[in-house]
Length: 230
Image (cartoon, rainbow, N blue to C red; front, side, top):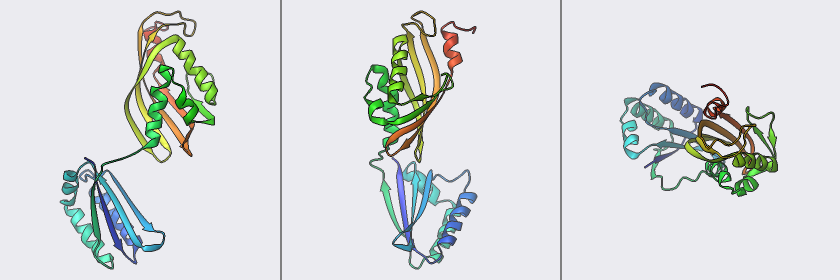
């Protein structure tokens, strides 16, 4: 279970605290177990500093605390604070990531004929970049038309392998599988099963997807269909 530690203190030297974080990151390279660390200053009182550190588990956090560098940096941190730091230890019980969920819907639902994610999640001026296409696909209506073209040619699904999200960007690695049931690029239905791996990155703005980039193995797809030599 993901474990989160919140450390709060008051200091007149926030820049020195920031320097300590840089030192800790440098000195624990390859051995620390923290996966994400943030430091913020209270907008109402800049002396109130809050540090949030994420670990894969409580046990991983304890291993991190046992590093000699962590102990030394903590003692230096205490010396910079006006009063002893306080700690809040949290087991993460909920972690909502709406953009990642939206990316999953955009991949999983349209192949079934459910176009509601396209209408709900794409911005009116959405722009889709796919090197396999002649140019960008612009707007939800054009995206739906493109998907319907694929659905006429293939009975297909996406298998999501992993996702990463940072800021307004979500990257999703997937495997595409389809049965060739209709004409595609001049080639009649062959009933062959086709697979292709790829990745899609979407940029979100105000809860809508504004832009998308696709990278996938079109060569493998065409070889499996017999459109080019293996």
